[in-house]
Length: 154
Image: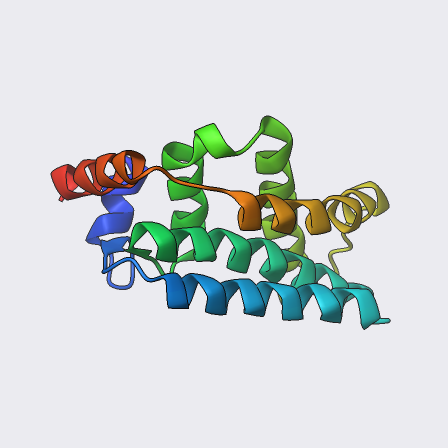
C-alpha cells in the first residue's frame, strides 16, 4: 500500500486542516527554541534530539501554512519528500533522514551510538535547514494543488 495512503488512514496521520499563519509562526518559535537548546546543551543525546526537533518543527511550520496536520513523524517525513520535494534538496532529505534515525537511536537505545560523522553532519546542517524553512514561500496555487492531491487519496 502506498505510504501516503496508509498515513491518511491512520488515527493522527495526515489530515487536512485550515491553514494558519499563527500556527506557522508558533512552530517556527518552537524550532528556534530547539535550536537554542541545541547550541547550549552539553549532552550529545540532547543535541541530537533538539537538532531533530529543530528540523521537525521547521517542517511542521510549512504544514501549518499549507493546512496539513500529522502526528506520525515518519508520515510527516514521507509527506515532505513527496509533496514538498521542489523546496528541498537531496542534501536536505539526507539531513532529515539522518536526524530522524539519530534521534531514535539516541533517545530510545542506550547501546546505540550515533556515528561521529552523522552527528557532525546534523550539527552543521541543522541551522541552515531552519533558515530554509523560514524562507520557503508557497504560491496559493501550489497549496491548492497539494490539498487537492491529499483529498483525492482519501
